[in-house]
Length: 235
Image (cartoon, one colour):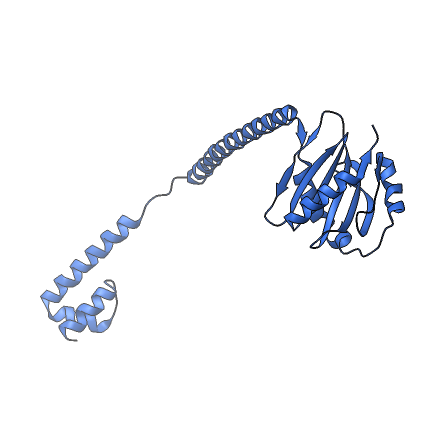
């Protein structure tokens, strides 16, 4: 066994029992010294790696994990408490502002109501007579005095918890949605709202809001003016 092979074998396993290694070391004092040195180094490494594990290590680890979890839960609880306090503050402020408002934003609510209803009303293609429409309007103290164009749809609906009349009629450029919404004295409707697609405008007629909604702003204005002149409400 040459010197290179001898060293490779010893490096790989300082405690090997290869007969060829033993024979080579017996014939060469330098090889014997090298082998002994590698055995000492290997023994030192093994000794350094032997660390006694405390008997209560498992309990200590469990305790540490429990304490960390507790601290995390406390921190999370503080965050939740802060969020809850913030939410309570926002709700309180919102309620106060709501109480201070002198109007209900029926224009914006009407746009949302049109989306909520979906195509059911807008795709209706009936032809209600003025007499049929007035029979429904009478429940709200209203009456249309003259023809206002084709009315495709006229039915009662629940608008923000209030029974109202939902109509769809013909405008100059397309169908127009009209809501007749009774409300309490002292409430004022917001005059106009838009979401970039639909536009809504409200008219106050005694204690009733008349809200017109359409994709076409011109149709909203035209229908509002036409109805304002031809619809009346009793006191």
